[in-house]
Length: 158
Image (tube, rainbow, N blue to C red):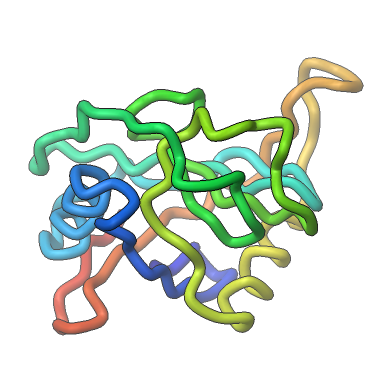
């Protein structure tokens, strides 16, 4: 996926962790119009997470959840709010996320350190907490997400 001007993030889908979620994201990447005007990053918490949405008008939404295969580790990707999506997050913390337990459906992992560096840039982009100290931090300029299947030339552009 490409996160606006921040750059590319390579994900490795893990159907062995959650087949339905991996299939949903693969379907989005295969359809050039699947994310049109809907997929974006909206929340950043430096040292913790990058969060966005993978909505689609053309791909059938994921509806199933499953306990994660382990405590989330740096680079794991799961559905936010312990739900089935479309809001997702990438955990960028340094240590396993014991505070999450295994409640989040985890379906992918960041494939390499270059991609993690891109996510760190996103997590540290200008942001604010409109609700005040101790509330969620929102990125000031929401970058669109473009998904594409690395095995094809197609892209789902948001």
